[in-house]
Image 1 (tube, one colour):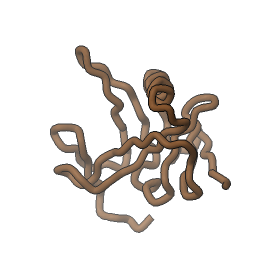
Image 2 (cartoon, one colour):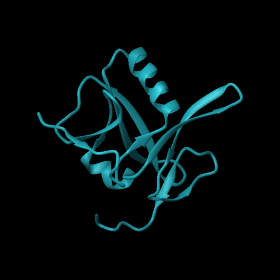
Image 3 (cartoon, one colour):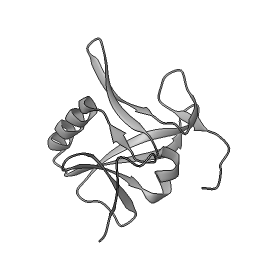
Image 4 (tube, rainbow, N blue to C red):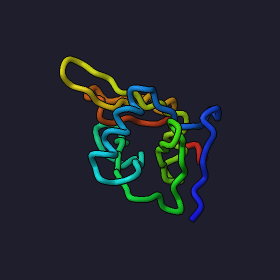
Length: 124
């Protein structure tokens, strides 16, 4: 199986802050799996919701984004156009920490931060 890897210098790449990389690394280790996939599902009050799946190995339609040396975040080809250019960050507020997604494709986010919408489908 061949999984394409994207160069982080590419504007369409998925990137992560150092804090997010450290968090993702810990969570993968705790999950007992070896990889993390970023995906989307239609849901929420605004259209799409991010989904993180811990997986044992990428599938043929996964694209790898190296977010740190030896650590890749996978995205299915079908979701790629919706999340291209996204930066993953770990944000701490009080005692709570969560991953947040800075998606340049999102045109609106709901007040609860759980979902987002996109401009009209551009077919691409």
